[in-house]
Length: 256
Image (cartoon, rainbow, N blue to C red; front, side, top):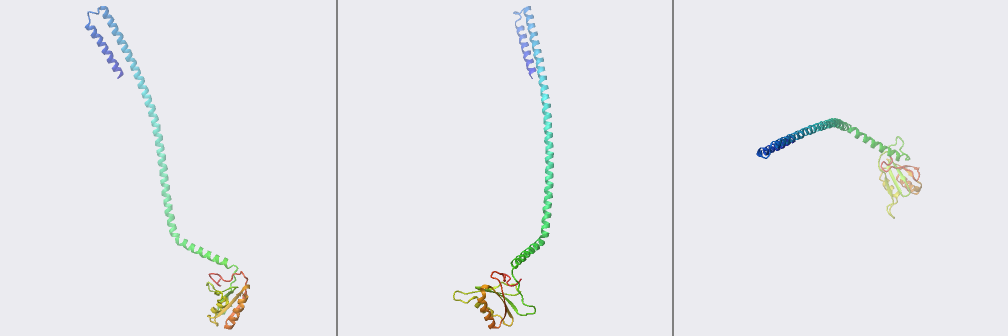
């Protein structure tokens, strides 16, 4: 485009000069004609020189553009290849994560099935654990508690009677049952031993047997109970226990 513009300008200048020479032949003589021709030749030479320079500049610019384009193209190709490699790596990682997720899901389902199958055994194990804990607690509570029983061949129903200072407790021998406690009823009410004797009279004298365990503070109450049982014709025996010794369990009474 530049070369064409310059060439057009040069041609226009030449035409203008030629027109001026044609229109003024009387002014310019042979010397003038030669001078004009020389001027035109110089102008044409300068135009050719400028055209050649423009051609060189254009060629140099085209070469630089091509080099720049080639360099940019190689950089773009390298960047594209790097991005493609990164994309392949990310796809591989995503595929690995998907496989791991599927494996974890399968393991979870297998664990749920196993848990469902093992639930009855787990429940049974929990029940056995609770029973073991209960037995352990019973053993801990009964470590220092003596266990009494009637002699073999005895058909009577035995009762273990704990006689303390202000309370008398009774529980059947060999039968898990909470003991029954008798205390003094009010300031002027019956004493604990009198309340116990009232209950004892409700038992059949031919079938009942009372084993009286006497604590140091219950000596006076024992004397009254002994006289009452003798008067009613009840069979009984006695033994001495310590003030803090446990003989009756709050839940199982006299049972082991």
